[in-house]
Amino acid sequence: MKAKITRSSEIVKSARIAQMSALFDVPPTEKSHLEWNVDLPIEDKPWNIGLIVGPSGCGKSTIAKELFGAHIVSGHEWPKDRAILDAFPQGMSIKVITNLLCAVGFGSAPNWLRPFHVLSNGEQFRVTVARAIAESTGVIAIDEFTSVVDRQVAKVASHTVQKTVRKENRQLIAISCHYDIVEWLQPDWVYEPATATFEWRSLRRRPTVDLEIRSCGKDLWPTFKPYHYLSGSIHPGAKCAAAFLNDQPIAFTSCRKVVHPTAHDIMIGHRLVVLPDYQGLGIGGRLDEWLGQFLWDKGWRYHNVVAHPAMIAYYSKSPRWKCERFGGLGNNGPNAAASLAKHQRDFTAQRVSGTFVYWAPKGSNPKPRRPHPLEL
Image 1 (tube, rainbow, N blue to C red):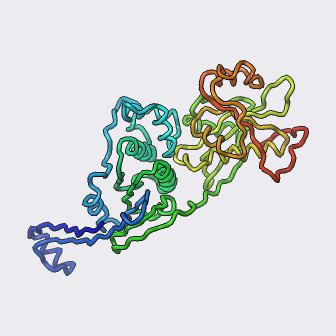
Image 2 (tube, rainbow, N blue to C red):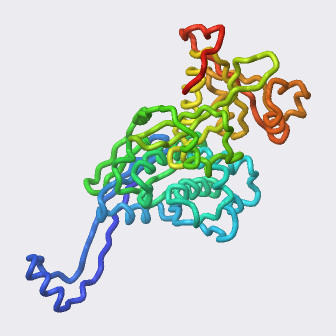
Image 3 (cartoon, rainbow, N blue to C red):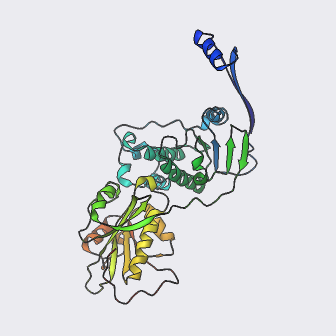
């Protein structure tokens, strides 16, 4: 794809123009003229992600509009008094919509019920990308990519978006002035108008996120409560822990003991929440696996009953979880959840869910025969 792009504009002489020319030694001219000779060999290889990047004023948007104008997502119309779910195509099922929202890292079900204008900048960015994928069939081009969000959020969002685009085998062109997203977006090609350079890239591992896991009290729960997809309450006997990034809590997990007539060594997952800005990195699953191993080492068995589609997908793929039951309680008979407390059975009966048991990896120490007193 080659193009010669020019932009010219007449300069109307004025006193201020004359003063500026004298002060800054700018030669007077009749026209302002800009020109770019663009060479994008993107037809040479298959690709999913492209990035046009450079400082403001280098011509990114001009080039993108000239070459991909018909594909640029300039925004959507969002109803002011309706949930974002209702703005997606009418023929699209709720399962497809919610899976797509989870895929771009917007997995907080309570926030799906809100209108677009009350969402955070990061949430608005992710749901805009999700809707663009839902409504278009060809190339998607997004100008000012991640420009309105916090830079840490921009990195996480870039990673979740590129995963979704590759999974759907779509093509996305991001136009941005930020170089900090390159390692997270993992573009297949990069074009820099400032230097007129084009580069093919290979897919690489994203940067690591180093978290510190600490025990915590229930007083931290209100920070995460609005983003939990079920009840906002927390059990009085829950044992809690949180993951911290740069000393800021970004994920919360908890468990509680199962009351059972014969088994006295079962803990069950209680509340697991990752703040919206950090969803899509697999933090929730990794945090729950840490808890499962911690409990295993203390002699406890760890069960989890989950209904969130993203978490079901994670547990189903992980070698550290064994699925004991999947579906609604009515499909499995009244004894399928006999070991669960009554409200857990009710939970299972009301929605499709999965019961998973933590399975320690090979090489782990044998689980103690008797559970130790538990303090996270």
